[in-house]
Amino acid sequence: MGKTVNGPDGEPRCSWCGEVEAFFPYHDREWGFPVDDDQRLFEKLCLESFQSGLSWRTILAKRENFRNAFHQFDFRKVALFDDSDIERLLQDAGIVRHRGKIEAVINNARRAIELVEREGSIAAFVWRYEPDPTQLGTPQTQSTSPESIALSKELKKRGWKFVGPTTVYAFMQAMGLVNDHVEGCVTRAQVAKARDGFERPA
Image (cartoon, one colour):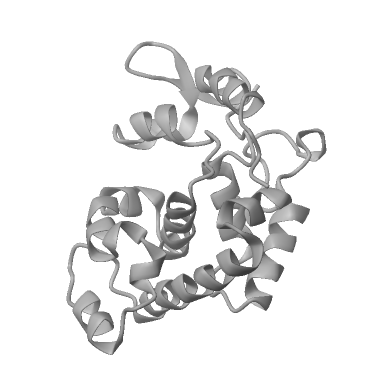
């Protein structure tokens, strides 16, 4: 059983929720629940890349600002961004003003369009890399997996940026490809039920 902390209702949650109050709703309603919506998947890959070197607390606090700055992460719109958009975003105090990461989002939006054209959807592509749960270690004890390494490698091969194995594994944890809620966390069973009823995109 992993470490837990009691939530506002007294029920145990993954211990990282205790870092800040805003983590509880994110943990309870989003983290680990399976996602097959391309726009949400693209958003999460982008936000995980922005998190690199920072804390998720910082990114979550700015998430709505990121959504407004990047047209709700509609990758078909973001793919049209040009140098003037980059300069605009570098002046936006509501997001993380890192030129390389901003440019990576625009690049990755263009790569996402190519991916959809080749594979049908982002969802169909990434869910092919869902790890076998029986091959995973104890929840929250690893930062990569063979599958996250393989997905990272393939995305890089296709021209994506800021998608290293650790970033991709965090994406997998959040988007439900992995149920990494610790044993004893009240949300773990809810995520397991959602995953059982989830129709993997093809």
